[in-house]
Length: 243
Image: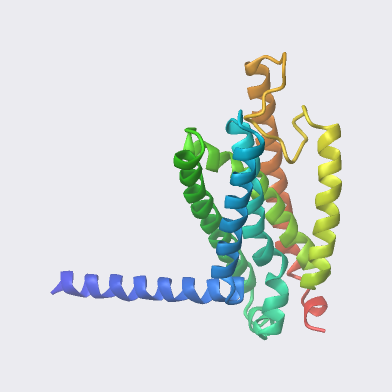
């Protein structure tokens, strides 16, 4: 009897979690999740075709580069337009009506966004493994998530300041262009957001490059946490969101 009750409670909780996950995903991607996955897949395939025909001697470094942009595409919309989607669907009023609930909601949403992005990137890595060249699939997907997490948390922070999806998108594009320009200057340092751990410069010791990569990943991780905390702190300013 007790076993049957325990199974019933477990089933009810599992159903509740799945329903909440589907509901939040619908809000996060505003019903466009399938199209963003499809667009990122098409983008990845086109980049792969271009790589095969234009760079016949490609390696893991090149594969990392073409996997990075579909990952950014996946995380861009939900982090940039998330606050606006909440405002448009009148959910912000509900979130601000429950003390501290908005923090939990957005922490769960961001966790779901990044976890789902990692799962899709992991799938893309397997496609590249069989369709392009063999490489460590898990490590490739893991390394890709550092800059994706950094830029996603930065987009979330900017969205809490701008509070408009289109405005946030413009700001993030400007920041992205600036970071790309700085990438040329900081290419071989730990401060390059677009650091490619597989792209070892000529005449540089592999151990030295590994240490630079490790420091870069630490820098991106700390930056992601700072941006996330900054965004959650901005959510305290109720009057600025419910004008």
